[in-house]
Amino acid sequence: MDDTLDSPDARDSFQLLPGAADSPVILHVPHSSRSVPASLRDGIVLDDAGLERELDHITDAHTAELAAAVAEAADVTPWRFVNRLSRLVIDPERFPDEREEMLAVGMGAVYTRTTHRAPLRPADVDPRPLIDRYFHPYARAMTTAVADRLAATGRAVVVDVHSYPAARLPYELHGDGARPPVCVGTDSFHTPPELVALAEKAFAGVGGVGIDSPFSGAYVPLRFYEREPRVAALMVEIRRDTYMTEPGGPAGPGLARLAAALTALVDAVSMFDAVST
Image 1 (cartoon, rainbow, N blue to C red):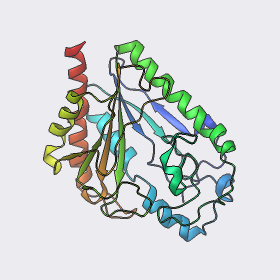
Image 2: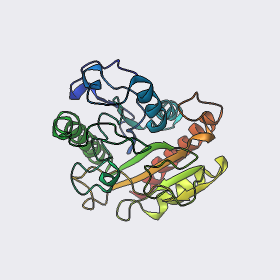
Image 3: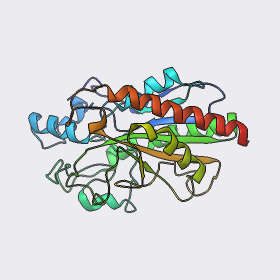
Image 4: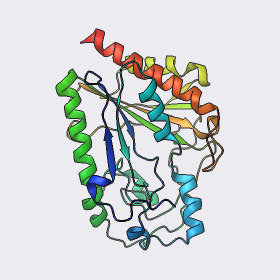
């Protein structure tokens, strides 16, 4: 457990790392951190060894490193929005209310169950303090970041950077389908076919792409969701055995190949935006 953020307030719990002024791309990295601040540890019922095991399973390990490599290599540097807290503290991509289907397995914005459906927090925990302290400020900051890209470039493209295990975990609601090296999640309103085609081309050399299996959807701040067609979104889910030792182990040479592929996607999106606006 990384508790370097001992008692963070909202402004410390995420980072917006600037890119090029003319880049429409935001690489969103919501699940890369293992940080569970000491001040929040008592709310989790797992012992220390159990918490470390759960962090191994639930963390999208090395995805912040991946996004940093892309930012370094891209022709037009993308912006990066990175969660500095573990998703075990708050999951900024869940709906914060009854709309969230993952509530069925205890994984709404504040998790009460683990990846193996064991207790993580007491079932009757009040999620509102964590939602108020971390979820809403995160959502406001991400909304502002997208609005700034719209104002600067006329478009915003959110590329959500995730990873997922080679074998289905018990919490997965839709894990029966194919588990390709790269799963691209789409949204019917915010993911144009051209964006999917660019992703398929970029990741062809790392084993290929599956669409919306085993995970679907793409993150868009609620202010723009199904309202602003100039906001495009794509979720990139990378199967962990293609670049690291599971669960929670070190990265291998596959990380560099994936960084090159994701860089190609970012460069193609930037060029596509330039010629289509």
